[in-house]
Length: 320
Image (cartoon, rainbow, N blue to C red; front, side, top):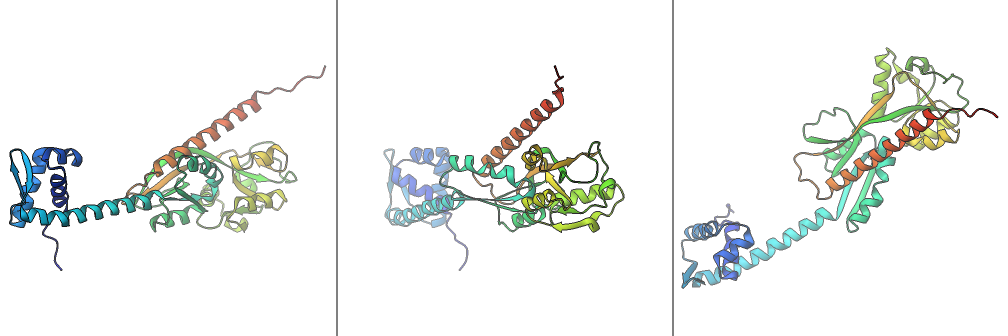
């Protein structure tokens, strides 16, 4: 079967002109000018080879052929409206978000606020290493991805900056033998075991690059690869080695004395980006989710900044 000779937009225009019995009313509903509507009807008549609409005393009348065509045009119009409704429901009924394991705790805090704003939208959040999340986005498994800022080399992707400088820290048990009274180089730690995410994690890649910048091949010091932050955190707490963690994820354990942070001469900081396919239509709720995530990161960073300022400004109280 060959391509359609009739223009479906012209059929819809014809349907509205016939139902409204007015070119101007049809133009208002179609957000077109009246001359544009008139031109579409005339083009349709030329294509069909028959007169369909006649204007008598400023009133729109249908010819015999026009009355028969109206039945078909009405069915096409209703089917198109049903198709629009279906696609709208499919698009808005769910939002799939892929999240880097490193930033998943903060992103998860956004879920409740999003669900209050869009109670009819099913929100799905999946956490995995950044490279794995990017791969899933390319396979259309996610509508958006929130990952550590890296050059993933994918031309199909667009990015929006979520946060510029999330701090990663190395944490250990309070019984850790190395002195942490002064900042250390990574080279001072290379003979200890490390608990890192598995291959595909952007944070792992960033730390290994930092080691290599100091001339150290750190891969041989990795004793455990774990997908879950909590697993690495607990292993460090038990005294088995050093874990790489987001600063925001260990504050309570550090405050309670269950973990301590190894100060580094050069802080490890990473950015966070929202990625999406540039060739795919944007999800209607994706922009709002990204805004909520930005706000969550900003609030988190402001809170950390206030706590650090208070910690450095406190002076010891002299005994009386």
